[in-house]
Image (cartoon, rainbow, N blue to C red; front, side, top):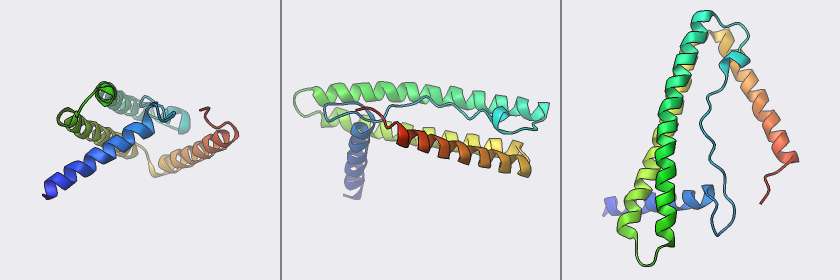
Length: 153
């Protein structure tokens, strides 16, 4: 019984996320952006050649993994949209797709966190501080720009 409830909750969550993130008949949703790791070289002023090489390797590997998962996620979302438009009860087909969609999103988040940890291990404490300050400033700048020019519906 608990497994059924958990399955339904995951399906409801996935269904809600689908409509919140992809354009549909209910309105415009958020657009998916490809994972682009931050350009650490541009945010930290005094990286050594060894650090630059390590960071490049880390970000390239992460990008490969995330791009692969995002391609599958895009395919899953396309299948879900088609099934939602189909006649009749599509539960047996949709629910496994909802679960795979949620699993992919989880794996993408985990990969991005692992990448962050690897980057943190390459940088010194001073460099990490500089990076965090720069990222915080960039976030604030983005928020200000977003308030001035909200997305069009």
